[in-house]
Length: 237
Image (cartoon, rainbow, N blue to C red; front, top):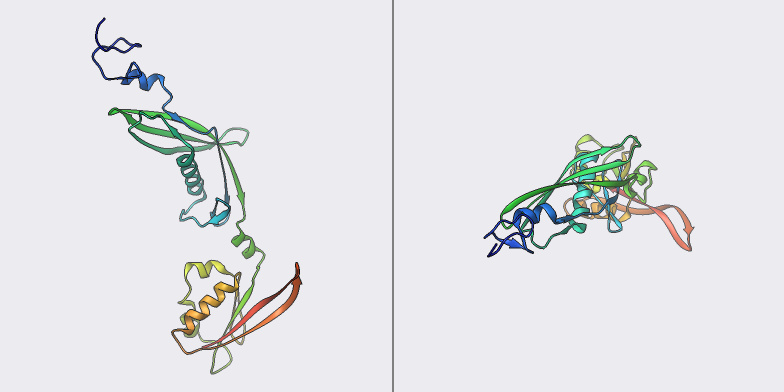
């Protein structure tokens, strides 16, 4: 036998990779190296993901999609690809549990070597923590750092138009920061989990319309050697 030939199947005059034809190379070589286990943590209420030491809000609409998002991110960072693979992609084919309740994901990998397509499947063990993110925990416990008291300049109580105008300034971040809303005879109280978010909202409104703003503090106490108090912002429109 003369010329180039595959040492496994004997085909002659074909393109070789490490003395193997492309077909035999795909059949015998490990093209994709994946982790045996993928770990992740996400909020069981809002779907926020724990990424590199902080909570990141997800645009996914279901918790299954959140888990898929974690799998895709972790695989993208940890998969090892054979140097001869020219094109590469993967999909989460299925997420399932065994009779013992352990979670797994079936992943389909696709690619090309020298123009020849290949596909492989891998089953990966999943260890997902379903917890409460900081924001949802604070909402659940009605934690707050600031109260914005919406009041009227002219009379007791706040009418629907003024309330709608005030709430028209609410962005998604502001809505996510509100832990409670209490309606009373004098107006509406909005409880914010962050002083800075409450102040940011008031600054934005004050720059556009003529309002009366007064700040005070309540429930002052010492914690870890620092003085803490709840911020109360009275906003009269």
